[in-house]
Image (cartoon, rainbow, N blue to C red; front, side, top):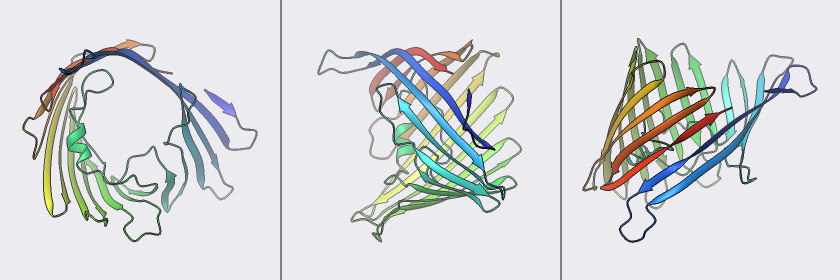
Length: 271
């Protein structure tokens, strides 16, 4: 849906998403294993172009409970690249990743991808040259300990290769690295990721892989697994997604995440 903004070369675009389903998380302490879940979001994207050809815009989401979420951002782009202030975009230390499984995601990927996380940056810069894109992210703060991240993405012959480093010069002196590789060939998609983090001179390494196969035009099966140092149990899950048409997708899956059994089923909707 596009609404006229009343100004030449400017648009306001509305999009929406919603989901409803049930989620199971094993909990021996209480009788609250099963929960009904729903979510509604309205996305607003505003865009325009200056007389000199610079593209500018802003994006934000409105949650179903009436709250405006933290993903709001403002951006401007040209031959120099794209500068974004705010959230809701992929940070330089979060490039790539593995697929999750189940309705609303059961979290098989959380530990390995979160191992590269730093305090949320809110200034982002990207520049693409052919198949190569460089990324830089930082938290706008006059404090010298403000976190920053640098990364690069490269695509060639079905491969997507992503690398990233990040530093947060706080009391814990946190440093992280990321290497993620994806490959797509026809109906098959393979993803692998390795992240490291060093905090207080203690290094933690995490790895993850996922395989997704489109059985037909409507059905995709995904298997994902991950492991992190210091965790006694790895995580593994199996999920299925079935395209119902019209923007609705049925999703279901089951997983063991750090020795906690999880399952979910529901419908995701895009408008």
